[in-house]
Structure formats: structure tokens, C-alpha cells
Amino acid sequence: MNTSAAHTLRSHALRVTPVREQVMQLFLEAGTTAMSSADIEKSLKSVDRITLYRTLRVFEEKGIIHKASSHNGVIKYASCSSGCGEHSHQDDHAHFHCVDCDTTMCLPETILPTVEVPAGFKATDQHLILSGVCDNCQ
Image (cartoon, rainbow, N blue to C red):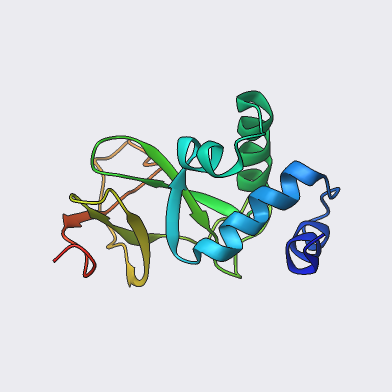
């Protein structure tokens, strides 16, 4: 058992299960790099898709991970900042997507701008995705 992964789960009031612990460990190792559910599935091989989907949903609800859309519409997930919690994500930042290797990573220092929406409208999500070539692919 990885104590860091287990500690993170417990600190978010989650029961430690082998699947949750394995998925949490992947996010801890990934740092600011986002992963799709397919990426996680390939890494863990023994996890069924339904269990993984439920685990990702619970992690997002608890403020452990956030969605990071890529330029092609594939949903990826990345670790939340320490300010996130249940029902209160503080991850309004940009993401960078490498068009060569398909890596998506958080740019936590790049805060999303305030955008005025028309009267009567309510924005529920905002995403800023920069596309280009990462330093490994250049």
C-alpha cells in the first residue's frame, strides 16, 4: 500500500480500495500532466471500465482531480490544486496540449480571463487550451 495515495484518499473521506489507491498513485506520479480514462486503463490493465469511471467521478466530486479538455474533445483528468475540495474546484487555469505526443498538462500559473456573457446567460464551465509542441517533441 502506498501511504501517500492512501493518505490522500483518507484526507478526502474516501475508503481506501486497491483500485482507488492505484488510480490515486497514477495521479500523484503524473503531477500536472493530464490523463484520459483510456490512458489510466492501459496503465492499470486489471481495472474494469465501470469501476474506473466511478472512481474518476468520485475523485472529481471530492476535489481530487479536475477535467482538462484537450483540443480534440477527449476528456482528460489532472490532479487538483490544494485549494480544491468537495463541490468547490479552484482549478480555473489554462491547459497546454501537444499536438505531436497528445500530452495535456496544466498551466496553473495561467489564470483564465474573466469573460462577460450576454444578459440572462450563465456560464457554467470555461476552458482555455493552448495547442502546440511540447519541449520533448521539438
